[in-house]
Every structure is written in C-alpha cells, then in structure tokens.
Length: 173
Ligand SMILES: [Mg+2]
Image 1 (cartoon, rainbow, N blue to C red):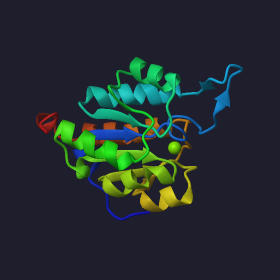
Image 2: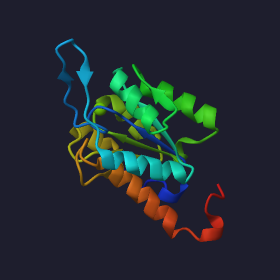
Image 3: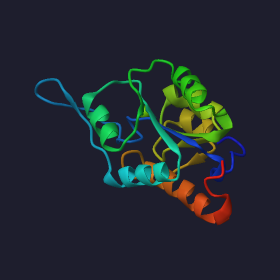
C-alpha cells in the first residue's frame, strides 16, 4: 500500500476499470463468440449517487465490448474509454478535458495495466481480490472483491466524505 491519499472530499473524478472491478474478471463467451459480462446492481446505484454530487465517473478498459457500452449508457457515463493500451493516455485526456489535477482523481483497479493510474492519482484503490502488484500501488483496498460491490464501497466512501462537509461548502469546488 502507498502512503497518504488525497482527502476523499477533494475527489472530482472517479476512474473505474471494467474487468475485475465492475465485473468479477471472468469472461463468458457466448455461442456466437460474443462476450457476456455481469455487473453488480449496487455498483450502479453508487455510481449514480456520486454523479449526483458532481463527481465525474469515467470507465477505462483495455478490452472493448458492447455490453460495457450498454451498461455505461444506462448509467449515464459519457467518459467511456475502451480498447485502451496505455491507461495513462486516457488519464491525461480526462484531466485536460475537465481541467483537473491528478490529485483530484480516484481510480479503482485490479491488475497491472491499472498501475499507471493507481500510481498517478490522489486516491488509488485496489479491489479486495486484486493482483498483489495493484495492491502495492494503491492507497486503499476495498473489503469487497471486484464485481461484488467493490465499486459501491468506494462510492460510499465518497458519499460519506461529502456528507461530512459543512453544507455551505458543498459543491463549492
Ligand atoms: Mg481489470
């Protein structure tokens, strides 16, 4: 685990990996070769809730699938980056587009392709069943594994931090 993270109340952008974070990492191939993914409904509720606070949610995946596009569309996630080889490129694009600093970002990952993000952002989170390399690069680790509510857990941290802020200062940043 890394040292101190950015205070949760300063996070303005939440970057999520797909496989192993929004899903349990297993890929199910249908008869026609299409890939099915299973998402957790409670993660969806958490994503909606942090969006309502004004936090931008982005999904950055090394793979590419129609199921992910559908899920993101359902959740109102405009920042969907699929088929990404180097996730730091997506991070730079996101920071530039939204005028943010890395310290204002949180990232949830589970494996080595997430390392550039976990190392760069203000709050790097590894899911419970993440690869040891991802755990070492992260500030925190969730109690729940990927695809089983880990993203909801992180959303709940952000929501709780927001609730603790004085009312007149909310949405001020
Ligand atoms: Mg992954």
